[in-house]
Image (cartoon, helix red, strand yellow):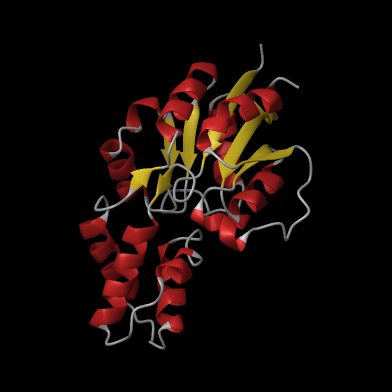
Length: 222
């Protein structure tokens, strides 16, 4: 039987971290003398790593980026990492059901340290076979190198690998790697995704995490 692999994005797919990310960004802005941004505006800046998030947030607040900005943001975020962040409704059950079928991996542009703390703190670590962060040996998404590494690591062909994510970045990553894609329409990254792209097959979407096991099965059993 051909090996399969299921790869999740983290923020906006497994976990709802919008409030804590926005609080950290606004704390940085406040320290620099700026006015806070709307939470939803900051959420649309998430997905391509801390450096771009910080650059976008400071620019939107009319502030300059300096050599310490990203480091300070990561410190402020580390203080708030699990203040309000939770798994999306139905994720715990969905991930455990999927883990019976195939290894579960996480591919995120968030640094690996906070990624592991979040997975541990939210009880997901025991079912995650491997996690790759944005500060590891592979280029950040949408570069497909991390996704391809995971497929090779678990012996899964692209057509037997499913990427699940909420953003345009995840779409571009899956497309570049030649894997299947499930768009998590419930995630905060989807608001900037919408239906602006023509999604090639194989692709699917879900409005609830509880729908993931059935949709993954449909993709892998074709």
